[in-house]
Image (cartoon, rainbow, N blue to C red; front, side, top):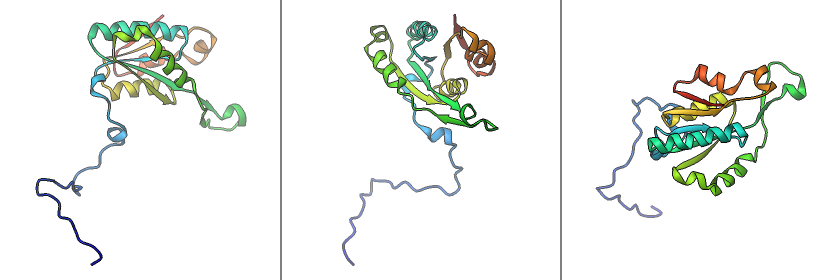
Length: 174
C-alpha cells in the first residue's frame, strides 16, 4: 500500500447518485436564479429610446411591487443567408460588446438605485429569450418598448410577437 486512507467523519454524508431517480431537465440545471429576483419584472433593453421608456416604466413597476428588476439584453444573431444565400437559414452569433457598455451605463445610472436589478445577456431570438428569462425567474410581467419604423412593419414587432406567445403578462410601452 502506497499510502494510508483517512476515514471520513461519521457526521459527513456522502452524496451518491440514485440510479432510480429520473435525470433533471436541462433547464433545471442551467443555472440557479437568485431568489431575490423571483417574481420580478423582466424588461428588454438595448439602449434605444423605446427600451429606455420601457426601462423607466419597469423600474416604477418593480418599485411599487417591491420586487427585483431583471434587465435583459439579447445579443445579435444574424442569418448566414445574408452572406451565403443558402437555405434553410442558419444563424451565426455575432460578437456583441454592447452588453458590456450597457452594463456600465446602467451601473452608473442613479435612477436604478431605487430597486435591486441584474443584467442578463442572452443570444438568439428576442421574443424567445425574454420569455425564457421570464420563465426562469417566474416573472410577474415582461415589459418591452414598441417598435417603430419599417423593419417592425415588415417582420412584425417584438412586442406583438411576444404578446401573442408569452405565458405571462406583457406590457408594451409606446
